Image (cartoon, rainbow, N blue to C red; front, side):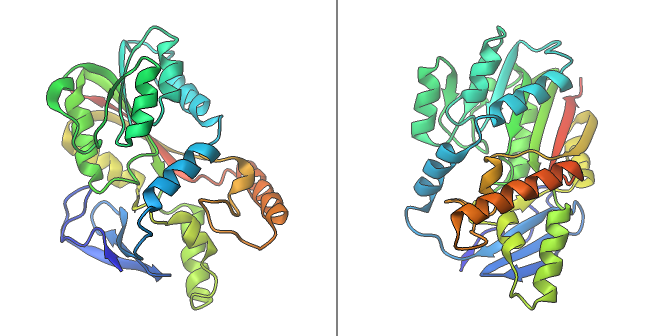
Length: 294
């Protein structure tokens, strides 16, 4: 077992009290009593090369539509880029999203901890700091009109620190956009219920929600309170269904656990499940939009 958020305080809001939520397959999940963030506090030890393998498979499988979907959300939330001249993307990867941003005359900066991805983004002409979003330097303080954080907070050890850094990087009146897995989605509730009802024999949904890489899931009201404490205002949240991988990958891939031993059947099941989720508006993430106070 590997300790993760084993300290006494919530990594988002700093509260000292957590409640047990679920224990499965070597994972221990606890929930903050104040902001309702769920966090992995213990997990099985990963293989030595796990991070490199995950990064390679994620880059290969990541939906080519994801950057475009994030760009569409950016246009919507900023009223077609009103007031946006400089954009900082936290966890920018190889800079695919930043490529779309720069096409509209916006100065682009990224923060990316993976050296190979950071170098590729630099070759695309973006300014890149190869460092964790928890630790990027003060050279960006008060310079950005928009900071984006697409599917990053669930991966870092101190999400509250990332949000504080984003606040520091923004100009007064600048905007923060965050997309991250949502706690209390139908997937969370069904995962916990099915695991408890079957005495741990059915844990596939939990294994989809929680993995070596996903350390947190966030509650909209708790996220709002934390952002307001940091000095943001006009905080808006809404649930969305946003896929990082192709629709056929969610019942089994190199990243996610396989539901059956038949790959074609897994792909069929996955596409059907994604179609149903879209029809029934079964959201999996929260989209957060906030303004830095003057």
